[in-house]
Length: 156
Image (tube, rainbow, N blue to C red):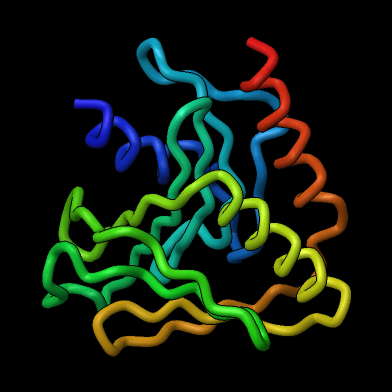
């Protein structure tokens, strides 16, 4: 049940915006009895996000290109020089894949994302041989806001 909630929540927090870009929840969002934080890119295909609850951490990706991927294929998130691999993915609907990670992996991904943002270096997500590259552009302070949101989860 909780995993289905995670899948749905991974894409619920995104506001409707005209152009793809980075968004973040400044304070924990709530769905049912679960509170969570998200840092996401895009509001339409392709779309990805980093997800944190007090006891679960995940990376989700959605793309129209990802319709024939085997469930359980891990997601590889690659920044220049560093690759992080999720656990086996689960599919919540066609083209939406979520892989769970440990808290320290999410911390390391956020550090790499902040460095990528400083140099405007893209990162990629690979799933079962399909690679999607996401621009980083200006993150401003979104990584810090995401970390602060996660801190609020721990405090509750």
